[in-house]
Amino acid sequence: MDVENRTIAVTGASGMLGAYLCKALLREGAHVVGVVRNPDKARFLEAEGVEFRRADLMDRDALTTAFQGCDAVISNAALYSVLNMRWKDNYAANKLGTENVYEAVAAAGVPRVVHISTFGVYKFRLGLPAIDESSAVIDGTKREGGAYRATKQLSESLAFSISEKHGIATTALRPAGIYGARDHNAMPYFRMLMALPIVPVPTFRFPFVHADDLARAAIGALRNEGTAGKAYLTAGRKDTLYEFFRGWKQAAGKRNWLLPVPVPTGVQVDCSQAERDLGFDNRPYADGLAECFESDAQYRSDRVLTASTA
Image 1 (cartoon, rainbow, N blue to C red):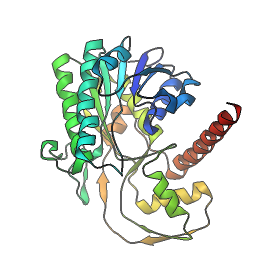
Image 2: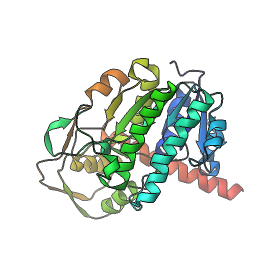
Image 3: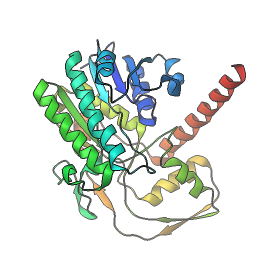
């Protein structure tokens, strides 16, 4: 599918990744429909050309109405919060919400979906061999991996089963730690750490992916019809946590001291299939974090200006 001049809906458009998905689609000439519970949270996207349609994940009829006339949907809305690991809340948003989205997609006659999953569906292992698409996954029905990971595994499984039932072409993406501007999960904790004069950082290997790199992979999936029915590992860079913080220091111009704590292991990933089929690529951490800091500063400035002129 050539996304130019196509109408593409993004659920959860007001969230951190949702905003990057919308912006990436706009750059490619798509007409973007942001399907959100509260459009007031992302008015800055409306100014860039995003059309908002209000719908809650628990309201299948509203979702069906929101998807009318769309050529594709990026199913992005989900619950991810480091402060909310309650099963009930994660199950409602991630499992029941996905069921409502896909049944609404079918009712609206939308033929194509990209589903944002997580590499948390895999059974984690340290060291080699690297995790790839053939690696074992957790069993969400047994609540393996905790509330978020288990319900996301149920969500992805449901996405494919409903797609098969209704003839929907679905591609799933499995990112790892996503970082970007306007993030209220991990980035605030990283900022607190980087405010210290000395920051001990383990050399543990763990992948992080910039939200815009993931957004471009989603567009790559839409463009490649051969990806339908498949799940792709879009985890991120094969670097260590220490290298992420070193990129932060460079991007922010910090003068504090990073103290590497040797941890000679970590989670290894192989994203070569996504690189081949989706054009997936990972920018250096310093470049990605510089974009985050610049975008956050512009966002804060715009909010102050809006408040002062209201």
